[in-house]
Length: 278
Image (cartoon, rainbow, N blue to C red):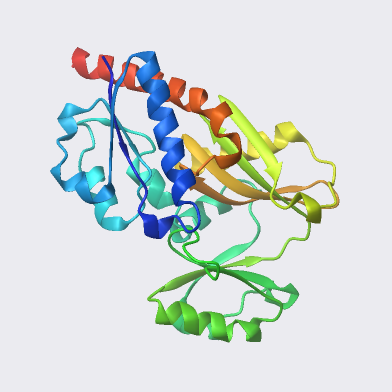
């Protein structure tokens, strides 16, 4: 029997998504139970009391460094999906250089220390830039802010400094349709939708290329269960803006739950067999 432990995301990291984040982990573990797995769900504050040897696979949605560090110490004792190093790779300070090596699928982005942000405008800032916290993805509605002019970013800098955010990711503005995407594998399942369908022009694009680029970004950071954001320009060019671990999958929850469970079950079974063979 496969034994599976799911770890919920911290509520502080689920702004307006607490219910959806909880539900995706519940329905996936329900599917795993249907496959014959033994499952259990726990809060991140309980991780210190977990014996990893009691579990064949752990599904952590948690994102805060102390919990990540603890689960990362379990390496070799159990399979972790997504691996903790992949979760850390989704922090923008780590993601940016990995995405930059993906052959032009990521908008120009630079990591700048918050303290000296106003002294280091990026080359592309004259056309507007997105200023994003450099670590975890959005925890509030002002963690990603557009500055039409770099001088407009001073208030953003002050806000980030006051909240202890030490680095920002400054990203060039790309005009186009914003797309949300989800994936498993990568290469096993993929879905997309317009973030705000009422505001898009529905520029034509190559869906296979979107899935390919999303898979490239997922492999670059090491995630197997992932989501992200993309932009399609009027010319149909696709850029991957962000990639993240264990999104809520809210709009596709019923469709994706079996695909995630199947992926986890297969990976856990193979890992368990490998450990037994040692």
